[in-house]
Image (cartoon, rainbow, N blue to C red; front, side):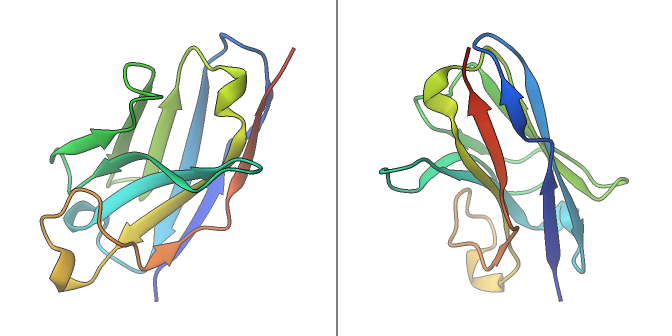
Length: 125
């Protein structure tokens, strides 16, 4: 049974940097697709960043391209989202997710079957 636990959220100011972490267990992190999804009040869920496998193809939403970076450290069983030059529009609950089903092998942004509980990021002066 896979488990994902996010951490690192909080209150930051515009222009700051922040790194979100997602501790994973119960599956081989290097072989499966991972992603970060956010949901802001009054808005639909948005796929922020996706990665198909270790060092595999990535996807970034236009709103975060050039500012956010998704990565993983398989030795530490952790997924990261590096957030630079944050904006008030980045305020949302951020979820870490993983896809372990063989049907989705090789996909960059699949329908994830495991999700974390989410961590709140608030960007405000």
